[in-house]
Each structure stands twice: as structure tokens, then as C-alpha cells.
Image (cartoon, rainbow, N blue to C red; front, side, top):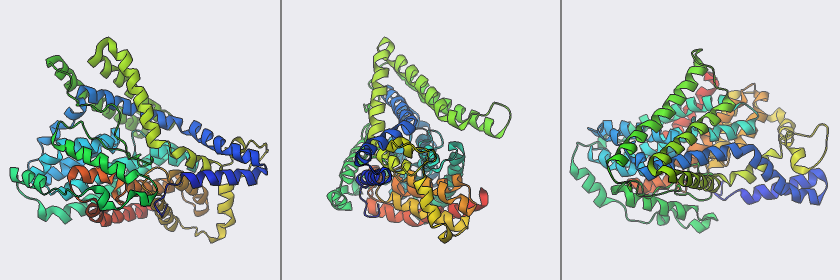
Length: 510
């Protein structure tokens, strides 16, 4: 991971060797390669399904042109550089929280960023805000879709809701600290409203290919940098156009070996006529409103007795169910009877995207599941009354070296999370940080859910796209037309200070 190499092959080889030596049978060791991935797939399929449904819904909204209308009201708020800064942050966070930064980056870049630059916001500040609010705050908490908290909680052996709540609080701390740093660093560059600002930005934009800014992608052993750069340039090309084209993703991100454009890409306004425009406007309001009401309902149940509390295991299903019904409503409103076919097509496209974006997690998670007593017998095909917990046993063997101090342990898990994110995957390291949190937390008298959330912050903020240039941060740099290495330098100190503050406060808050 430190060498920025993909970890699938080492994980599979380690699975084979561990299962072989544990069972004493070469055949069982070979079968465990498949068994570990199959077990992980079964445990994590709910995560893949929710990604697929949300992506399918986005495809339906894009076909109707509603996704672009969702952000248009924000443009009226950008009367100066300060308001543009806040508006870009709010819009990116809002869209990314419900749909991930995958669609948010090209959408904000195409529709809002030019207006923000016209209002006096420097391009570098705009790019930094988009990265912090989207790839950072929204993705690291993943509070609505709950893919990241689900991975962390499953590995830590704790409740998804607990990890999600802590991750939300910590992500806000990191994000607010980082945004404050970026604001005060760039405020002297804020200008006044002028068309010349936008014209200058377009004329002075870097034309250096993003691959050249990063060096050879082949040196990293896979083509992620090149694919991401191409997606970023496509998003940049769409920056002054209709807005739907050139979507670059991969924030979950980052869990895939490539950064992918979501399926169902279209011009977004192929529907013609007043009725189609009206329906597009209705769904541009209805979809975010439905999700906002859903989140409000869950919060009311959690903190008040006004409505029944939604169990953490049901929250993802509730989001998925609402999203599926909204998808059906969207396609039938646009396509009529043909919606029976187009709805199925959007669902298939969503499943394809989910496995391309997250499929690499399966063999990695399978290796760490092998260290869990609940899964080792199933994976290796052995029968024992008390199967061992290899990872926990490993930790216990060095227990006397581990400081029983939650503060020190929190920073250790944060650093481990950041190391796992160095290969450009925001989510691939979560099985490791979650497993370590579950193993180390009790010895340090610290809640494993808190440590898992801290590790999630380190992994996603690093690999999800704020601290390394070979992640989906390329897409942000592309739409903002700034050098990606300069953007990394601009974000480095603010994000590190935010992560340190959140980790230090985590032991006090929880």
C-alpha cells in the first residue's frame, strides 16, 4: 500500500497460504481462495445493492435532465467570492451526501464553478472546497448510503449505526477545520464579480495532460491514473457545456482500480416539450426532498420519541427502498409504458457500476474475514467446536506492547488508515482498520466503533480524494482546470490539521 500498488494479489496469496497452513490441506487452501471471496460477497452484497440502486436512480434523473436542475438554485446565491465559497461547499456536500462525489464533481464543475469564479472565487480555492466537501466530508461519513460505515462495522464486529454516527461527527470536524484553513489562506485572492474572471480562468487553464503531471501510471502497476485523468479531462470539456457529460467517479470510491463514469450518461435534456420540462422540475425537487425527509425521520427516531427509531440494520434498506420507488416514478414519468424496460436497464447499469467500483474490496475483505472466528470454518471447510480468531490472537500475542491509551491508539489507527489510503482506494483499507479497531479497542478500554470511525477518516480522506494525486482528486483538478499536484499541496496542511483535531477530540466526545 505504501508503494501505491494494488493489494488484491497479496490478499489472495495470503488467503491461500493462511488457509493451507491452518487446515494442513493444500486442496482446502486452494478452495479457500474462492470461499473467502464468496463469504465476503455474501456479507457485503447489501452494500453493492444500495450502490446499484442509487446509481440507477441517478441514471433515471440524468435521462430526464433533473440532476442539473437540482443545483441551479445555488447559482443565485453567488454574489461575491465569500458567498461563492460557501455555496460551492454546501452544494457539493449536499449532492455528494446522497449520491457520492461521483456525479457531484462534474455537475458542480459544469454548472456552479464557472459562476463562482465569475463571482471572484479563485479556481484553486474552488477546487479545494469541492474536494473537502465532497471527497472528504460527504464520502468519509457516507451517512445516507452507509457503505463505508457498513464495511468498518462489519470488520470491527460492531453496530453500523454507531460507526456511522461517530463518522458523521468526525467528518464534520475535519471538514470544518480544513474549510476554515482554506478560506483564510485564499481570501486575499477573492475578487469582485466580473465576466473577466471567468474569461481569464478559461484562457489560463493548464493544458498539461494530467498523466504528465503525475508521471507514468505504469509505474504504479495499474492504469488508474490514466483512466482518472481521461475522465477528468472529459469532465473539464463538459464544464462549459450542458453539464451532464464527462462524469468522473470512483470515490468509493476509490475502492476500484479505475475511476469510472457512472452509467446512463446522456445529454440530460433530450426530453423536449413543456410537459417534459415540468416533470424534470418536479423530480429535481421531489428526489432531494424525499431523501431529506427520510434522514429527518431517522434522526427524529434516534434523538426523540416522536416516531419509532429505525434500527441501524434497517436504515440502509429504507434508503434503498425509497430510492427504488423514486427510480420507478422517474422512468415511468419520462418513458410511460416503456418505463418497464428502461427501469430494468437502469438497475442493470447500476449493478455493473457497483461491481466495477467496489468489486476489488471482495478478495481483500475475504482475507480479513479469514482472521475472524465467525467465518474461518466456513472459508476453510474445517469443523471445530471453537474456531480460532487469528487476527485477535495475533493482537493478543503482543498485547503487553500495546499502550492502554485510547488517545495514542486513536492516532495509530488514523495513521494505519492513511497508509491504506495511499494506494488510491478510499474503501479498500476499511476491513483492515475495522478489524484492528475491534481487536485493539477492548485492550485500550476504547469503543471499537470510535476507532473504526477514526480509521475510516484516515483511509477515505486520504484515498478518497484529498491528499494524494493519483485518486479521484484528479477529477476535481480537471473540472477546476488547476494542476493536481498544486491542489494536493493546497489541501495537505488543512486536511492533516483537521484529521488530527478530529482524532484528538474523538476520545473526548465518545
